[in-house]
Length: 393
Image 1 (cartoon, rainbow, N blue to C red):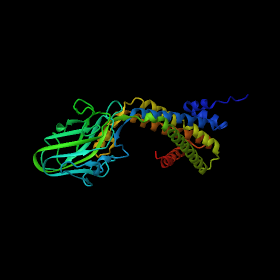
Image 2: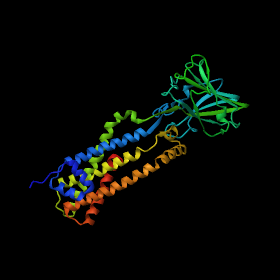
Image 3: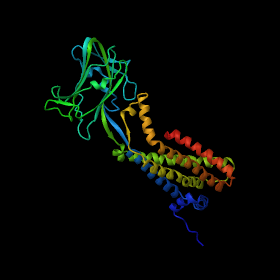
Image 4: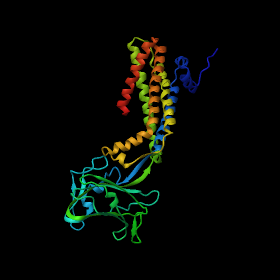
């Protein structure tokens, strides 16, 4: 009587609930189509996992961009001197972070109660509507021995210095401290701003000016760093089509590397113990065993789909010591449960894969269970080390 040949999809399913029987049947008729189908399933599921992560992630867009660093506070020649103010680059006192370059802009004046600084030709910057920047942030340090400034005013030019929006920032500095970087974030296009000039338009900001005033005369030194427009959040999923090819290639490489090296190591180790195993069935059984990678990817899709929307703000991305850690802790708190589920699914997948490889080794090499599990464990973790060296994870 002719034996009924199962379809690859049936064999894959049987590996999940009856691996010993499935592997016996596969050994009698080893075909690569089964592992290739497993690879396709894993790749599709893994791409779904990438998509879920991207769809839940919103990254703050800044101007200047991350690639430009904080270029407006890296070059003193971009600033216009006002009424005796000296402007220079400061290479000693600056914000140390991934977005902040290696200098700040220093403004100083002698025997005065006022100091002003003006930055022009930065636009047009759109600060209007859903696609416009929502806030302006910068760091200020003043080193004179006086208390906080009496008045602080910011001007945003649009499009010329005769047409602008202005707002008092005095309250923002009511608890500021000398010789310490004070982090200021100002919402844009709201009721706190006053318009001057009919041409002033939030969709066409071209420059800014800051004015500080103290009640008593002194020598004033003021530093500015980390000037960014921000508040726009975009998800990488908007460009998912562009990432799709790379994600699929990485997933295929991940599967092939683990498949080939795990199969090869199992083959070498069983040969070292004088087993008469064949390369082809060994590799094919390992390919079926890696169905655990697909199941792990599906579990990750299910777990991460429950995440709330995650906003990666400038405070997190900027890399400032302490500040970045606090922002990261907020993200970690929201993802803690899902991360635990993902970790547990990874552990389950590891032991499940080792168990399947041990069954395959016992069937092919006719070793004892203890020897089969020992070989499978060594081969698995060695293959993972190789994968980590090649792919970085």
